[in-house]
Image (cartoon, rainbow, N blue to C red; front, top):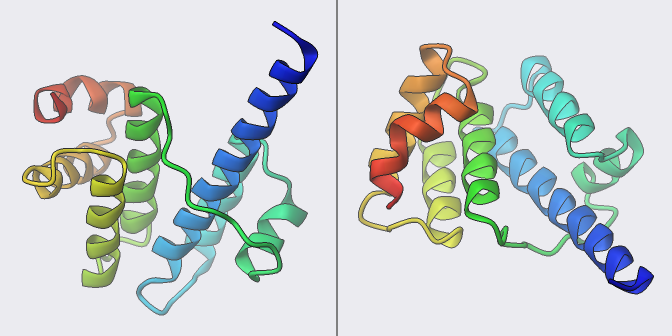
Length: 145
């Protein structure tokens, strides 16, 4: 593999992370309230995905245009959906617009449109029961096949 191939993969990872941050921000702001608990989760997830505070702030303030990117790997698709649902439930209130957006993202990620609500409900239940993302993936694997 050439250096340009590695740089391309790195850039693609960054672009995908920026897209994911934008999606998380959309969920956090969908109910018209962006509070400290949502901000804390967003900061943690940005750090996890290698997105700087400055870049996150630029994305949040629409200072940079961020293209929607569908993750390529099935596990990454699930991981991003899990984090979007986690953002939706972090404030202990599920707004209809947040739920609608999670369904839209699930469908755009390629999950079965007839089962997205069931998938999201299962993820919500697992998050509320303190299950990790890995355990949740095991529990919902029959839905996403």
